[in-house]
Picture 1 (cartoon, rainbow, N blue to C red):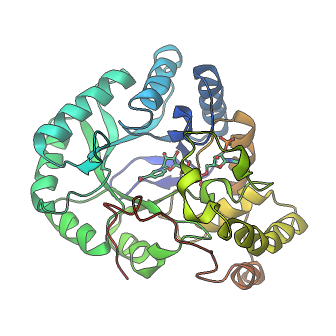
Picture 2 (spheres, rainbow, N blue to C red):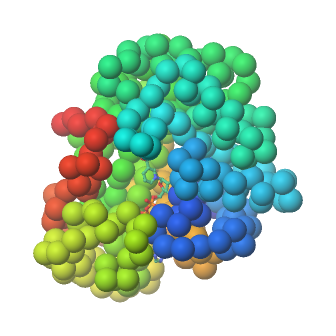
Length: 327
Ligand SMILES: NC(=O)c1ccc[n+]([C@@H]2O[C@H](COP(=O)([O-])OP(=O)(O)OC[C@H]3O[C@@H](n4cnc5c(N)ncnc54)[C@H](OP(=O)(O)O)[C@@H]3O)[C@@H](O)[C@H]2O)c1
């Protein structure tokens, strides 16, 4: 696996990371053993950048990583997040007290004394970002975090934060069907020496080898209430993506690897974190590192999946709450 730098001054990590939200059953049931097998495969493949959060299964994802770390002692770079309070009503808290206490909980579940990267999961709109960065800088100085990141923010927030103390990574949704970061965020990160970390780079599974079946989504599956997976959008999206799948196969690539390779192709500072519970799926995803596009490939992908092709917004109205909109 080729390496990329996790922001100026940050560690080198495998170009493909691993999103560990799926270990909490976000897109279907799983268990600790399956998570551990996936993490073992990650190490073997050179996928050494693990992404989690305090709220993925309310600590379940971090617990799976923590019990794995305790027995394997691998050399991995861990990112976690705080700032969302999901219950009883979803809200955001970027106060020093909240970020500190949530980080302590994450360290405990992970069984480590520091994490390499700590994201503010959503910005609290009324709290000056400079104050939040002050808290994060203190955590860096205390050795509890290697650097800080921001999630679902606008370029203006990144610039204000970065001026206060260098930001290491921005994590926003980005994939062939979610292109908002092209309206300034991918570019701002490149300019400032900040890693850009696409989340949901497989479009929450739409770029799998076969399309997911919404009639089989479990009660807790996030996609049940996501507009792109609801009819009539879902069928229209599958029809739109079919041509890309045929093209990827004609080039000898697996479909999810080709979709992931498209994110890698957007710049050397782009480090995607595809999510999976499955060691077999991760092996397939890691082949994205071997794909290099010709200009003709890029033109064909742009023709097949032009900007804005997706039917339906990437979030429902409720899911958009807390996301900074820009462009
Ligand atoms: N900052 C934020 O607000 C935020 C929001 C969402 C996600 N994230 C992070 O980003 C990570 C990735 O995003 P995501 O999990 O939402 O979406 P994703 O990576 O776009 O897609 C995940 C889905 O793709 C499927 N999949 C993965 N590899 C596959 C393969 N080779 N073949 C077929 N299907 C495959 C997975 O199913 P299987 O498990 O069956 O493989 C899962 O259903 C998360 O784990 C999390 O760490 C962050």
